[in-house]
Amino acid sequence: MNRVRLTSPAGAIIMLCFAAFAISACGGGGASRKRDADGNIVPTLAEQDPTGTLYAGSIGKAARGECDERTLDVLTCFAYRGHGYEGAQTALGQCLIATGDRAEGLEWVRRAANTGWPDAQKLMAMLLIDDAAPEQDVVQAAKWAKLYGRNPSLLSLGVVPDRSVAEAMAGKISPEQMALADGQVQAWRPVYWTPNTAIDESIKKSCQVEGRRPAPRRQDIPIMTAPLSN
Image (cartoon, rainbow, N blue to C red; front, side, top):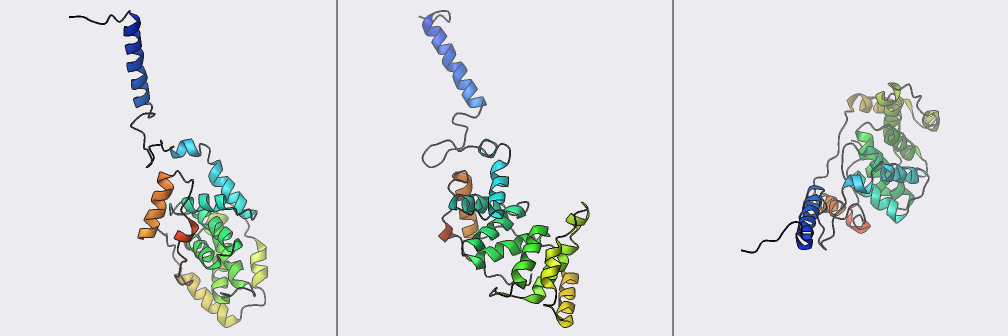
């Protein structure tokens, strides 16, 4: 029976092939890696965003009003992860409002505010007290302003709430309306939004399979209709 000598050129090639296969399998570079519908290896989250710069950078762009389609896509995929990504939900709301999708944007900000996220509570107060806002609601605005002003996440760090919120409320709320707002503040409890519809799941899957690039088409994301009173 003929055998291949490992010291021969053919034997060396065989050994190299086995070694390469083992390294590829153990390192996740071969068939063990998740692949998309076209057979391309899907990058892990660590590979896509090793230092969190994509997340922080997109939120920073939203704060500066730089809401291009790529920023909207990235924020959408982060926002649909639910609890723990309230910063992305707030930023997504800001961008949607800035680009004309006010109803949907307001809903995303409200979702983040309902968890106790201070930036979202501040933004809700400012949006709802605006005289030009079609959904102006001074009682709701006062509620969010009060919750923001006493937010434990800020106070525990010694952060002084932005005075512009209280200044925006001055002279716009009657004693009766303030009493209603106080009652809503007393009854308020944090609520954490969780993606749970078929559309939510399809968006999450698109984000996972395509590695957040591209995110789902904007027209596939429905306008929210939940009441503002939560």
